[in-house]
Amino acid sequence: MGAVTPLGATVADFWSGLSTGRSAIVRREFTAADKYSLTLPVAPVDGLEERIKGLGVSLMRADRFSQLAVLAAEEAVAQSGIAFDEETGARTACIIGTGIGGQSTFDDGYVAMLCRERRPHPLTILKVIPNAAASHVSIKYGVRGPSFAVSSACATGAHAIGVCAELIKSGAADAGIAGASEAILCYGALEAWKAMHILASETCRPFSKNRNGLVIGEGAGVLMLEEEEHAKKRGANILCRLAGFGMNADGKDMINPDVNGASGAMKLALKGVKIKDSAAVYINAHGTGTLLNDPTETRAIRSVFGADADKLIVSSTKSMHGHLLGAAGGIETIAAILALQNGVAPPTANYDVPDPECDLDYAPNNAKERDLDVALSNSFAFGGLNAVVAFEKV
Amino acid sequence: MAEMEASLLEIIKEHAVGLTGELSRDTPIADLGIDSFSVVEIIYEVEEKLGVEVPFNANENPFGEMSSVGDLIDALNKLIKN
Image (cartoon, rainbow over all chains, first blue to last red; front, side, top):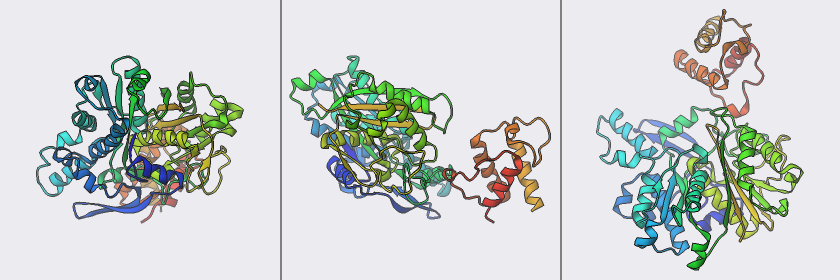
């Protein structure tokens, strides 16, 4: 796995932040055309300049979302120990999703054209297209199997991983680089988000009564998926099993989530997963900290687990790293896997006033040690698109 | 105040795609044929047309229980910053 997140730009640093309940949310100013300014809480990834330079000239001129994806892929591929030759390259897929693609390139282009009456950068098109990250990763490693981007807003990362897993299951590939990237911390995109009136005023407080919305973050999360026998044959270091994947749509509303869609996706992911004890299950919640998501997700979890729901640990790590939008599923699946490996459920940070409508064990403010067998990562997106990934300890 | 209220009614009327009769404070919101996001769009137009700011956070449920157009106008008036 590879992660570039506001809590840390490697998997180890990410886990260090998660397990200590650190918040990466800061107030930051964004400007455009030396004239426009917006200050708000966000979760940025800082200090990547040297690493990006190290990617070479082709990626230095790519949009940030591609750069973050390749940095995460670098870590995942290195950890997997896979060396891509003619044969493995042809049998490896590359599915890297994004919510919106090259947003800051769009911003820069419009400022150049409308404010400075200049042409946009000559590579603008190649930078903005949502498949740029998948293409850059495929080019870097000579990955020549099925490769494309998927997009489903906040469910993108989970969908990318699930779709790649299905490609491997179907025999179209033996392995796959799967994940997502998002980098929209720029003036235009953030003004558009602000215009929706759902951003938090100070911080992200999932499941608290005084929660008041999202904090946007940036980053990328990438997994190396592999067919089990193929991995065992080459003596791979297997981190966990991708045990299930559920995807469905609410078919109801562009914004408001539906409890039936969410519970349905979780049930699909858990089909074929043997749960011996619900106390050994960790759910990395979608947990955006909006008025509607948190109680709806709580009800959906209760509907899936019944009386056993009270034994689960459910936490929203968005409280610490913000909402990475398209990349949320990319890093939150990694958080779920890390919880499994370490026997520690990361906390829901900034937990303040309890909400009677949100009454599960959210590991408020402090990580919880627990021997875990199964971890779920929930993603319930705008537009009513849901994706849930289930991991089992091996 | 009466002028502001008249302007707000005008804007709400433009968004009331389902309305068959006249629009007044007493008109039930259910008769307007709008959805929850229409309120956000109405506010956007109020800001554009009347040159005011209407800061709000949807997560704080500023529009709570509204049954009539009058309830909506009162809620908007509370939020409008000049």
